[in-house]
Image (cartoon, rainbow, N blue to C red; front, side, top):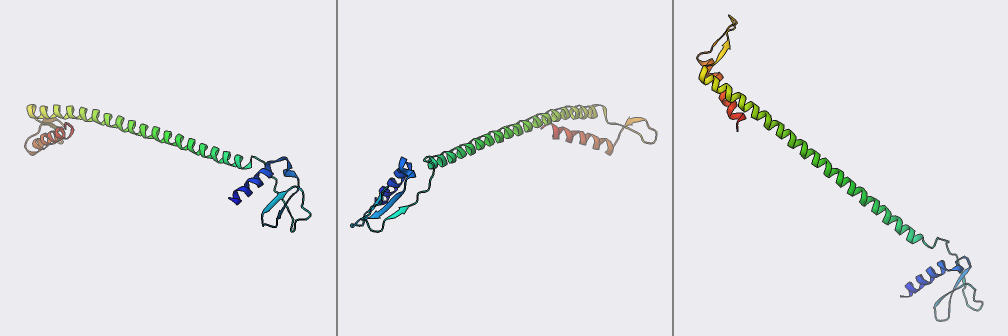
Length: 159
């Protein structure tokens, strides 16, 4: 408690008009500390106290500056969070567009291989004879391989 009173008195002295005046401190016969702007001639061990001149609002200004800096950091964090959210949303949208494109391609490939498989089953498989350069119907393993490949592609793209 005595320290609080002492601190209060010093703060009061610092903010008062006599802050520019000389300040003296001394202890009385009971050991109690006294502060005054005039020295006590009869008091033993009188000391002049040198006060540092600070603006009265220094502590408040420092506090306000810390609060302002904290506010700025908070605003930057919120802005970064918004930017990150926008980036994530754009990424999700890009993935959705890619999936839609892939689904459209798969659908087209499904139709293409369904038609090819049906055509091979109904009309047989035609290929080019490398010797004559003419189109002709494939027979045997070559025909079966072409039909099986078309069937596998139907199964692959028509899930």
